[in-house]
Image (cartoon, rainbow, N blue to C red; front, side):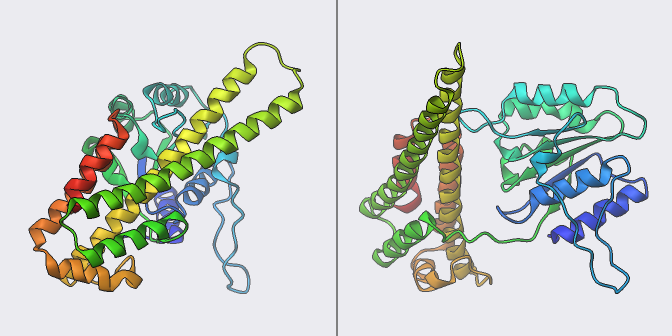
Length: 337
């Protein structure tokens, strides 16, 4: 069962007031569903003397709660971990630093909160290192794991958290997603099952990514040039070198995030095909209903499931050190040829 962010907060608040607050929550849902705002509300609620907000005024109208962005709440007792490395992974050192902060002694009425944003981006070593703390955190410690892809976490991590899926829907057809949907619709008209169709889709996917990467690199170069000009050699040492490396890593991170979004489009479009095949309601791309229905009618369920599995395997492969273009070619052939 999925919750609205308000309902989810009320459940957490009620548990806290009854002294039954769980030590770890997995807050999941699509991008833009309110995961970080919910985490920020929970952090504010746990602050000493903090106002949990919400409720109703004298006229019975709901009180609008002012909640700062999650990153603004980071401090001595609130630590936030995000993917930072070039590969947009959360590395084991970041998790160990978080754990050290959680074991620092605090006042008797002080809660310590650790937030892991995009928790599915934890490297396997980071997840395994975090298991003991996740199972038995220090007293008055709350762990919040935020993710749009809970399936990307180890089962041992999932089993140690109270799951709180949020309602919400991301418009996957926005921006470059619309180009990919159009390519899928054209491929459906031709019919899946040929190398030509598969490699054409791969070409569209790769060209979108290449353009996004070029834009991110250009933006990083422009920002570095502006900073270098503003500093006017006022900094000595390797500051600019380190800054250049950080901006390059940020550009790579944007690229990987866009790749993940395009995979969301591919898998959601194929999920629509399966819905058409099984008669399930709720298409993600209703404007493509004729095309997804055509594929559903032309192939048996087993073949469609194998295509979906091939996309999942390709997505997982690209999270390793596999050569991207080769992996894409092989993966698209498996999924669409």
